[in-house]
Length: 426
Image 1: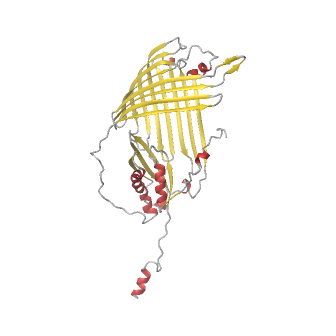
Image 2 (image 1 turned 30 degrees about the vertical axis):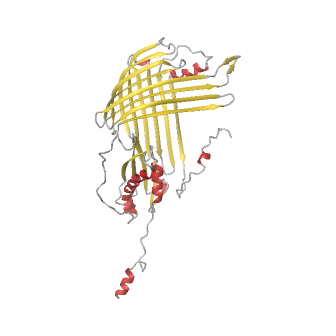
Image 3 (image 1 turned 45 degrees about the vertical axis):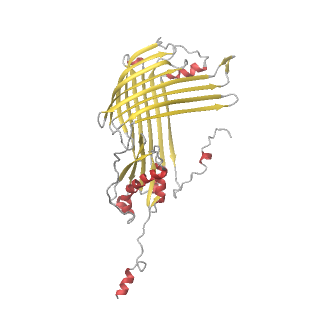
């Protein structure tokens, strides 16, 4: 009788192993900085036998990835969201973890920082939906703060670039270069930058009623600015901005300088992990201009007080991202002599399992004194005077309907061929 009992309880003699299926996870890469978190996390998910990456419509858990950056560090946030009801009683509707990753580390070192965070985010759902998949080890943290590491708030960057086109009759060349110096801490920041750009375009002249119109253009500009700000607390910031520049003789300004100072309120903290911003700022100051040619007010130069009211918002919650920028800039008196009202709206929305929607709309209403006279036979003067148009509106929207492959396989071959411009010749 004892022998019979032992045979019944032994593995493989009457008791089958409990059935289980992998946790179905949809990966949503919403933003990343210099660390390729989307590729790394996807690779780590594929390597987990208890997890299967699936399209959104089949997911038990949606894993959202976001990152912001400061100096050499990317602040990465992983947020898991689930709404399974009785199927996963006891699991949280959302759970998030963050990690700081130095983008200069090797790939293996970056993944060694990301993988433990990924496991912690998924563990509440694996504990319930795949019993036995998670083991827990609690230990004292090692090296939470390296007090011997030397850091600096200072940094700089240098850039240079260009674009060129050459053919028998059409040639163009654009070049730009610049440098920025900055200092950044959690409570204040300062930045100084300067940029030079040059654009040349050569093309055949246009003949209109026996009159030849030269279509050659040559433009250049040097611009620079410095911004300084100090946080007064979690929501308030005080600061100032100095901007200036010079343009070629066909441009608007022989020289311009603008100085403003003011206050900003931001609903979100300065280090919000999703990069959320909901802020309004008011600045007051002055502007001094020297024009390449007299404007419609008969001025060759002008000095006047100005003000700016700027609102900006960028909010991301799981599958919805909204961005709004509004600004009102004007001469203080008389207000309607010079003013610029502008707005920009951006929205990205996952409407359902198979529909994505994106939209952007930009509008500007302004009163800017343009050149007093334009040589209508000069192509360059006509095109360069567009800065004074009173109203400009532009926008786009896009619907994307998708039915993804249910095996969620990846294949990045032949992408260079897929991306060839349709109108770029043969």
